[in-house]
Length: 42
Image (cartoon, rainbow, N blue to C red; front, side, top):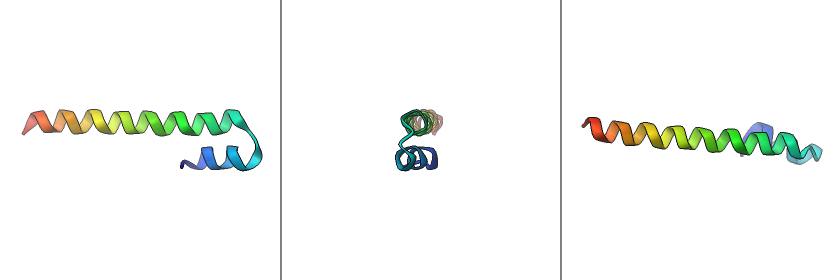
């Protein structure tokens, strides 16, 4: 859970919670893309 997501959840701020989840998903997608790219380099 990201810090933004945690703060949003604790404060009842749905927008902040959603932003945190979105950032986390973007990061995971980027990592997966980089791993796939690295796999083809080898």
